[in-house]
Length: 285
Image (tube, rainbow, N blue to C red; front, side):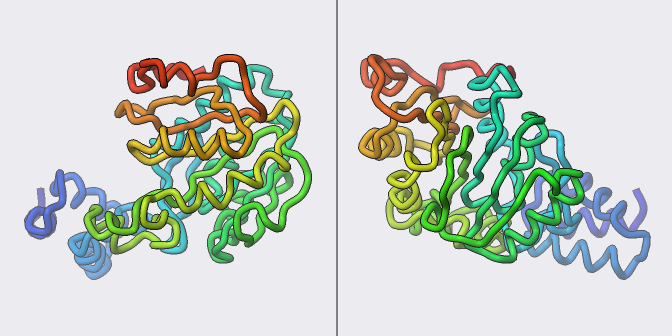
């Protein structure tokens, strides 16, 4: 390790960065210019996320551009794509996809990459996020099959979709300050803040989803830790049955699969009788 790398690693370690030597080497690969390298080290020592320093983040099979206007895509959210593939073994059955709160476009673009007959719409309250998602669609070769718009949840939408995806803000307002600095200080609060109990976005979007869902369609929502019970109640009140609830790699119930109408025995009902979703497998379809 060169002296510059040693100094960088020591600075990152002092800032509380895990694996500082590895991160110093990653930063060195981003720039051969010493001044640029020092600038990157200073930004990372201030806990700016590595993804923002790189300008991109991998998600599913895609490399996506990221910016301060959006959340950085996380591996936990890939659970929603796994759930979609499990629900539609016939990939040609999905023709229209809606992604509410699209951010970088990660969920929509990953779905379009897996469902080759589908066209998709991504919406986001932040125009800058919708613009970034559109740029990612072009970079991934999916622009002809995707459209993006700025809008607030379901209010301006019409039509029916086979697959609706959403990773809404779900962090309780009072918990945001205690998140990792990379999240609390650098990711947009509007994409994190779910209101006092973390459920405001679900209350806003769930009542309008039945009108947007095709008869055999499904909606898949990302959940925060411990929110399955509360979101399940909101979903059933809105007229859905909970068809599946898939855990992420950490065992957290992360993807809730909803179908319109009641069922004789839903996954939700099974849970109330003692079933544990955290114990379920996470097999990739």
